[in-house]
Length: 115
Image (cartoon, rainbow, N blue to C red; front, side, top):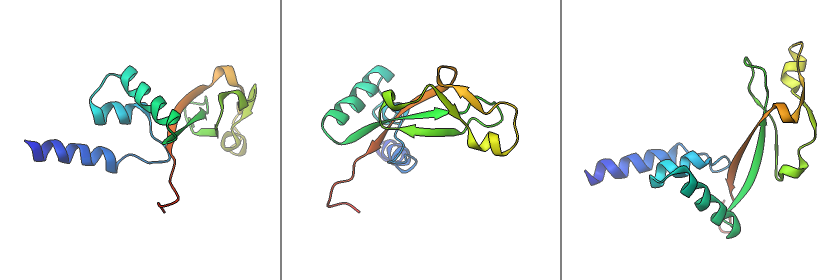
């Protein structure tokens, strides 16, 4: 039983990109409510272990790619263009940011000892 538990936790860690850690990753690993997982992430930010980032997703259903990421929510402009949709000749590629989904995620901060 312990082996199964540890294998499940190891799979969660293996599948988590240190450059894109979502609250759901933390929630799943620690088996805690989403609110507690967000608190853990925010404490990690205050302690310099993680940095908070913001990804803005394209509104087009057949795209939904990340248009751009930002370090600060205040840096997100009022309008954004999805270059992929623009290059593909789609009618809608210029969006008001208020229409778009903004996803918070966290990024692991590597220390000087890590490569």
